Image (cartoon, rainbow, N blue to C red):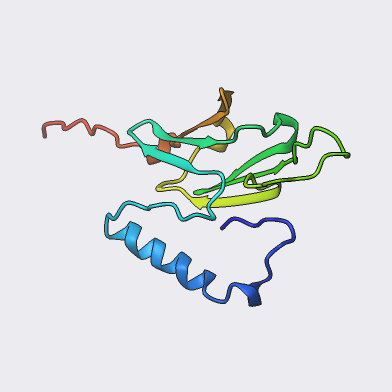
Length: 146
């Protein structure tokens, strides 16, 4: 769930928990998740045999203002988008780009090996590679004769 400044209190979003439950039910039945307008940063998630790859759009966010954390099968992206104003003497005609702090936590489709997670940024796209733990990977069992 995305939180913008000022932080949204639970009483303002009483259905947030139900929305999260519905998203989990849809995911369990194989439905693809479609982002809503408030989900920031927008991201794509792929799962393969080696692990999970997450890409997120973070244009204009400094790496110093970005924080990633992973725990079991949850990934949290925190950051701050600073407003861009040419000077204090200008008057704003239109402001469509949102600024301020953001937090987004997503549930990953499997556990990950937190020690081997890698992240990089290229052209405003954050790429996070989350490898599966060796214990979670399928193993070929050798069959012997008696």
